[in-house]
Amino acid sequence: MLLENKVVLVTGASRGIGRATAIEAARQGADVAINTFNDAEEAAAVLSAVEALGRRAIAVDGDVALPESAPAFVAAAVEAFGRVDVFVSNAGICPFHAFFDMPVETLRRTMEVNLHGAYFMVQAAANQMVRQGRDAEGRGGSIVAISSISALVGGEMQTHYTPTKAGVHSLMQSCAVALGRHGIRCNSVLPGTVATDINKDDLADPDKRRYMEGRIPLGRLGRPEDIAGVVAFLASDMASYMSGAALLVDGGALANFQ
Ligand code: NAD
Ligand code: RM4
Image (cartoon, rainbow, N blue to C red; front, top):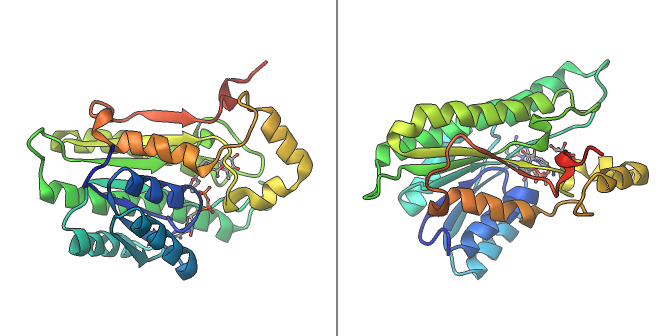
């Protein structure tokens, strides 16, 4: 068990990678608080899945783009479980759209959810971790942000999205520097293409799906569970000397040049 008796918080955990991460954390022995947004039925299913693994869970509804959602989420988790050991910033959107006529509101919302949302949430979690102080081994907590392969490469329909994912990794690097003296580790995970609701419409085009699959040496798109295991590792004490790092989890896609 990598996360035995730890308290793990995950944003955007009603579906996809966040849901798989919350359930994996419980499988690894953690109690889990999930942030969800307008997804009550899905949230209830995640709570049941965690409880079926013998762990405790709470769900807190909130839009990560709003600064007030972050302290409210952390406070609810502390009230329920007493502390925050691990924080996973995962919530994100990618409304695929061309560059030349990108609606201002789509650009703003993508930036505000993906980047500002991660900032507010990580800030609230870090404040709580600092209040708690270090454990006997000098550990102050672990923060993992879900960035993307898109932090490293571009996308024609993702000109609003890829800068947020580069920003999320950069946030982890600066937080690693700002929080190191408190024993708090900050790292990012860069998933490749994982079949979830975020890219359902994009991958509904059979040519696009075949193209994306063809780029991947392991021969298949990612599954949320492929990412969740890596998040659990980074969150755990197994990664006790990792901070400011980025782990690419893409089935080999980025390496596949020719
Ligand atoms: P998803 O659509 O299945 O899940 C996104 C989650 O974020 C949902 O639970 C949704 O409710 C939540 N969310 C959206 N807006 C929110 C808001 N304003 N406030 C709170 N929660 C909100 O997609 P996913 O693929 O699981 O995406 C999760 C993260 O993984 C995102 O940050 C995404 O950028 C990143 N990512 C995904 C892929 C991929 O190929 N699926 C690849 C790289 C990175
Ligand atoms: C990822 C990557 C994937 C895309 C998702 C939405 O960062 O670009 O290919 O499907 O975002």
